[in-house]
Length: 181
Image 1 (cartoon, rainbow, N blue to C red):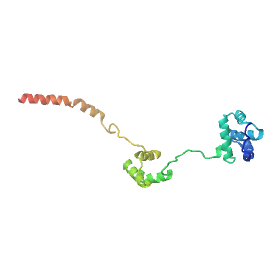
Image 2 (image 1 turned 60 degrees about the vertical axis):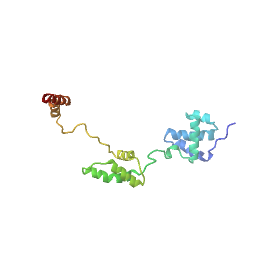
Image 3 (image 1 turned 90 degrees about the vertical axis):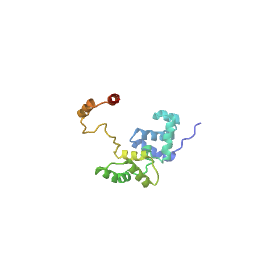
Image 4 (image 1 turned 60 degrees about the horizontal axis):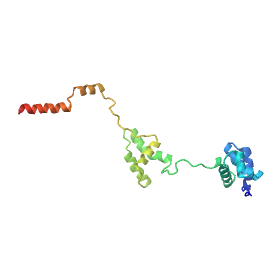
């Protein structure tokens, strides 16, 4: 014989939730509690009725009962930055002097930011932490271009065509030495 279903203390809340449910998940969770208590269904029968596995049905019931009759939708979900050093607002305030200096024509030096971050947090942090901090606030490392934006490509090509190569210079030196001997 199967064990008697527990959770009678939240039965009234489950009945209300069946009527008030806004999502299918809330409805299933209320049904997972209601069907075994009201109609004496087993977990397997309840799972078949609500369209989920037996394990998931058990989990839905347990969550509802442990939360005191609150559906999963109302509980806080994990996510976000759990190991953050500073809040977003603190990061903005920390980076403000560096960004202001960069706006005035200065260069944003990541090493300086890392050093200031070490002092602010009271411990050493990886250089990647400084880069991640900048990345979160829309800054990226700029690498120099392959050529100067004001370069005259035609003049550079003409110089390449007309300039002596290193091998021709050595041949000329060799000839000069041979003639003087």
